[in-house]
Length: 198
Image (cartoon, rainbow, N blue to C red; front, side):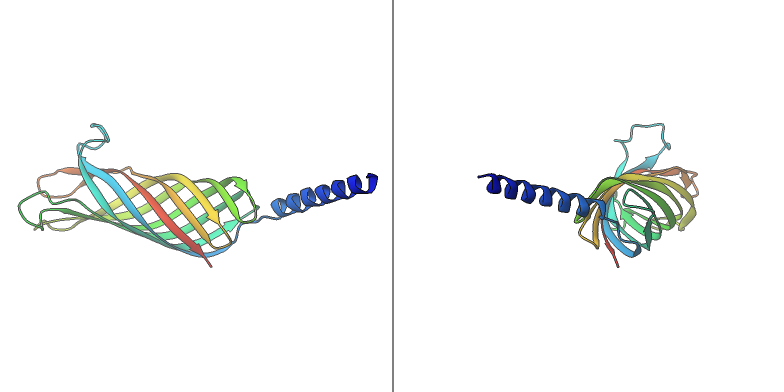
């Protein structure tokens, strides 16, 4: 009976020690990454003087390519180039009566994990994006201008290579999109991205 109790105690202690070691050794993967995702947001005139629930809907896709690195399993960062395409539902009588918005540039994000285990981690991601934005509508001349965006969200890593990032971007600069001096602003764009790290 004493031997049985000792064996159970040793087995339990061994399992706890192995589990603790696997958690302690759980490091994030540094490397090159590719990402692709879905976006949805709103845009309109009058910059931020109207509720964010007003304005027209925008739907689209985003792509990222860059590098990610970690100091330890808790803190890291990513630097990447990105391209976002969004368009609105039809506004007028035909299929050309809709906005197309292209946003492209470079970004830097900080990653902070609050759960970091071997097969899984979860944390926050946030940073800035410096970009160009091009607005296209029917027969307008294309308008391109500088854009500055804040990005904040969450990140879940599953396994060594796959991650899901979801968050929201806030473009900060209203843009004059046509000769009538209309100042258009994307109020926000929420996104869900799948990211694969090599």
